[in-house]
Every structure is written in structure tokens, then in C-alpha cells.
Amino acid sequence: MVRRSLKKLHELILYIAWRNRDDPDFASTRLTKDLYYSDFERFRQTGDAITGSDYLAMPNGPMLEGLQGILEGMQGKRLLRIEGTPSGPFMQQRPIPLRQPNLALFSPDELRVIDQVIDEHGGENATTASRRSHELPTWRYTAQGERIPYGTAWLVDPEPTEEERRRAHALAVRLGRA
Image 1 (cartoon, rainbow, N blue to C red):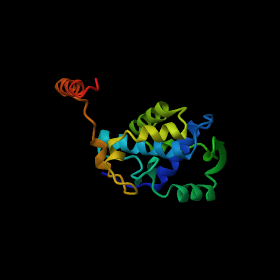
Image 2 (spheres, rainbow, N blue to C red):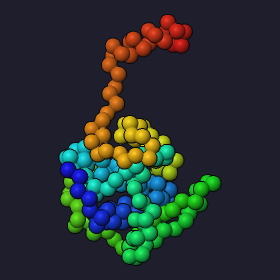
Image 3 (cartoon, rainbow, N blue to C red):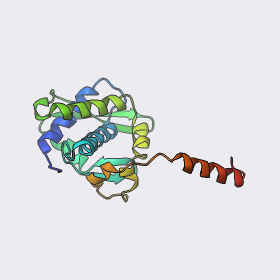
Image 4 (tube, rainbow, N blue to C red):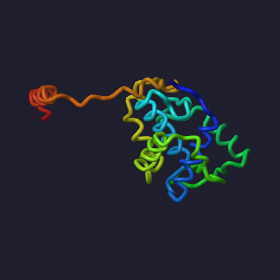
């Protein structure tokens, strides 16, 4: 089931930003990817998302719908501030938490998923985070600009079987491409 919780979303944003506060490559692109991975991985495991937020299939991968407005609202409530940081030819928007997150809103299992996501993606810059997200079936099988259905969390790209590998190799040999 997907239940939306703006309060949990705010606290999750604060937590991800807090955990990445010393990572110079952390900015809003990786924030939105970590939010997405956390929600969709939890949904894949349990059928229940952490925040229930909507994510769109955008050219740079999954993007939290309304991210800019959400971050601006959090700035207005003095929960965080946004720092512009140069990254190559781009200006990254880096969320800086102004207080520690309230982790009491999350179950131990939710925190385990979130921490695993943060640990796996720590140190990635925006380009790497976007490229990685392009490999996801959830993103690839959703039209650009459309909401990514939570049910796509169960999609997987199966490994080719040994027979499929053998046939592919035989075809490559026959075509002179092996």
C-alpha cells in the first residue's frame, strides 16, 4: 500500500542530507535518487513505501515530483537551506539540514533500507547517480514525464540463461561479430 506522508518525506530529506553533510558531491540530484531508491526498495520488500511520494521518469532518471517546491517549503520552515555549489559547468543545489532529523517516525526496517541506500550511493556525483538510475527497469519502462508506478519495483531484468548466451554467441559468430 502506498500512503503519502509529507512529514516523513521532510524528515527523510533531512536524514539523507544529514548523513551526506560531509560529502562534497551530495546535492539535490542524489537526494532525489536516494529518496526514490528508499521508497521503491521498501515497497519492493514489503508492499509499503516509506513516504509514498510520487516520482517522475525524467531525462536524468527518477525525480521526486514537486522537489523544488518541497525544498522551498522546507526552507521557509527553517528545516534546511539550499546552497548553490559549482560542479563542472553546472550549479548544484545542495540541501543543508538546519536540524537533526526526527528518526522516531521511521521503523528500524525502514532505517535499515535508507541507510543501505545512502551507503551504496555515497560519493556518487550527479552524473553517476543519474546514469545508474537509467539502468532501472522502473525508469526504463515508464514514459518520460510520467509517474513511475510503485508496482514496477518488482520488475527485474533477468540474467540471460546459458542457452540464451549460447544462441547469442552462435549468432555473433555467424554474423562475424564474435
